[in-house]
Image (cartoon, rainbow, N blue to C red; front, side, top):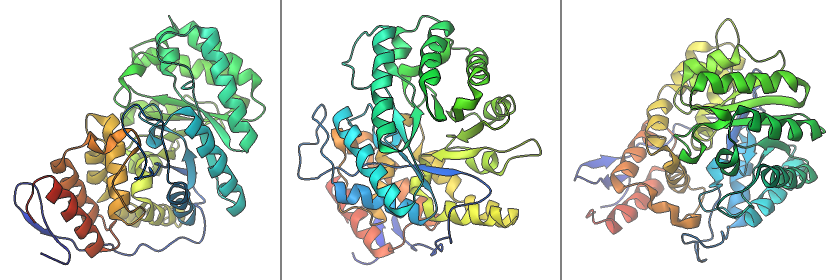
Length: 384
């Protein structure tokens, strides 16, 4: 077998059609702020096995960020998509932020970077230890010139007894901020260890805590990234935020409608899925800038089934699909991940991703994508 044909798990033959050639925009979108949360490219010659320190292919990792900037996106660095807490240790994270921020400044690219507490050892930590860890990472990010994103902390989720504990920690961090930061609310579908964040498993009560915090510190909060996969809840929170505080959607299921918005407002974007669909997303946002809403909807429509499959439960393994698609699209030469995370999705799941990405016009070289898919499925026992 050759060319663009692949035998999928189950025996079906599929012929790829390849990309539709979305043009690069003249610059970033003007009607929305849009960040793509970028993955990292592992060094395939290193011991990137579970529990080992992460070793990155720096050239490919940084080249992918230039790909995103070339389509007008800001880069959301060292976030969940980069395998924070799932293989990317803090020494590698700190170096990643330093290098990416330097590249961003060199090309005039927008960048934000994640601030967490993952330098702490696993296990219990006091609120004081959590706060100090946040401050340490906040200083590391500020030193690079990237805008900080105060990520949800597993340590804080384990240590906090109630809403007041969360507000006390975040109040100290925001009071010390010398520029506006981005807050972060990652739901338990992305990380089960974050269940009950903001002091309650009741999401209405959790939203009340977020609104209280933002209203106290509205001049120090650029916006909040919300990843709950619940469009109605996001819109409700968006309408409660003070004027000037953005809602950055992290909803990889409902992003077209949330970014499009309604008469009362819209969400901006900080999305993992944008790393996989950057050419299409850039074209859709350019159409939105021109007021061409029908074109916006048409461009985004075929990306939604892809995104819903990519982020299907267990959602935290979506990074495997992100890297698989980057490999198929030619952004890296291998399908290896830090922490051995390439095993997080089945061949059948990846086969569906292949066909959905092809249908969305996101595989620019059909022959290359097919050859790589054939190699993977052959190793999985699917005769080609």
